[in-house]
Amino acid sequence: ADFSPTRQRGKVLVVDDSSVALHWICKAIESKFNCEVHTASSAIEALSLTEHNDYDAVLTDMIMPHMDGFQLVSALRAREKHKKRDKDPGLGHKRLFICALTQLAEAFDVRKSADVDVVSRKPFGKAQID
Image (cartoon, rainbow, N blue to C red; front, side):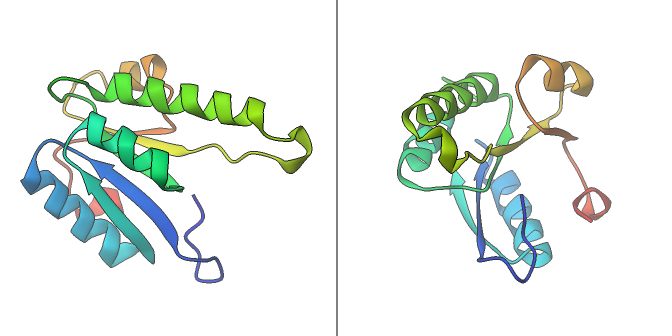
């Protein structure tokens, strides 16, 4: 996602069932990038928000109750494919940048099994944001 100063302000969605994690992730993003940050405390809420907002990036926890991050990513990618089919092929289509946030030891496996662009291990510190 392009968050350069010459670009219109980006929009990011952070999804995590932990309010503490949401707070710190948002604080880190807002201090580093010139973007608008929205939050969702569940994958179901995130799906609703993505239906009504055009996000440049989604950062999602992978382990959440009811609907996990894997299911969320799958639903977002399916919606993307559907929208792409509905658009004029000449207009182009931007792929949603998705970052998986996980405590799972098998971070590489998360990237392979979920169609995400990047995997970040939780908990993380300032060095991973820079």
